Amino acid sequence: MTIDELDARLIELFAREPRIGVLEASRRLGVARGTAQARLEKLRSGGVIRGFGPDVDPAAIGFPVSAFATLEIKQGQGEEVRRHLGAVPEVLELHTITGQGDMLCRLVARSNEDLQRVIDKVVGFEGIVRSSTAIVMENPVPLRVLPLVRHAARISAGGVA
Amino acid sequence: MTIDELDARLIELFAREPRIGVLEASRRLGVARGTAQARLEKLRSGGVIRGFGPDVDPAAIGFPVSAFATLEIKQGQGEEVRRHLGAVPEVLELHTITGQGDMLCRLVARSNEDLQRVIDKVVGFEGIVRSSTAIVMENPVPLRVLPLVRHAARISAGGVA
DNA sequence: GGCCTCCCTGCACAACCTGTACACACCGGG
DNA sequence: CCCGGTGTGTACAGGTTGTGCAGGGAGGCC
Image 1 (cartoon, rainbow over the protein chains, first blue to last red):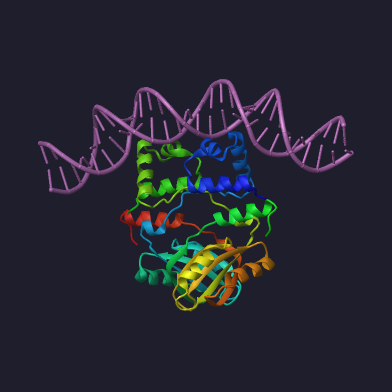
Image 2 (image 1 turned 90 degrees about the vertical axis):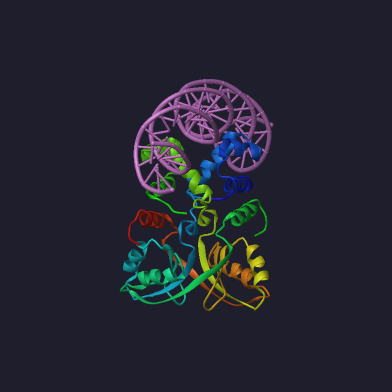
């Protein structure tokens, strides 16, 4: 799936003002509504845009502390550990990774104190051998994709990588 | 900001089917449209819902490889490093953390080979002393917030933490 | 050159949703 | 008992969406 300049602008527009709708978007981009609509559909069916889910801020619902935990798993226990972690609501995401440590997961908690409870819940499981946690202090670059989208569009436009 | 059962169901509903709109949502939840609309507005202005931005999949636009890099920063160079990393499109997010290593960032790349290029770009900067990278292999739990929302709602409903 | 496909434009229409307002009912607190 | 807060129904105007269709321009292929 390649993405061109128009697609990128469309995505950026919707990222900035999700409420505008196709018609308004087409007006701003200076194209026909059908075009904007078709592009959007293409991006959606192509898997580029997974959806428009609401962006919930964990801090706003009482979980302002976040942390990353690196877990070491006992051989062959991967499946069980995944299920275990998947069932913990404070586990926001989980990755299996290379390097020392086998998994990396992102946690949130109500406070530093509460984080201890969360970690205990996460780590208190058979297959987990060891874990080390890093608390997030600041978040200078919040999760973003727009610069990447822009970058991808530039490349496909014949630009230099 | 507290969140109740209805708020949680509203969020879940919109997470699952973002296109439905307030009216349809109110029908499914069995409440009046005004109620659903008011709740949504409350969640939005309360910062719980940051927005409805499009969810872009980096893999779908040509960046299927992702990785986490732990960076060690030279004292006093934090500001410069942030700016530097903020300018790299392949850097999806950046956190300052406790523990060994001062920053943790998430990267994406076109391939394992390309990851080298990205890392060079990221690390090739004055203030960065050392770095270690972990490539993501699987992602058993993709970034999610719904279980947490559900959890938060249960708690405020008088449930047990 | 000629032809065909792909993509965008413009337009039309019906159906539907949103923003907003208002009156009324219900519930717990002061 | 009165009041504020919250949910219910209802109403109206204006704007949007989903969809279909004909026409035109650009680029690739034979």
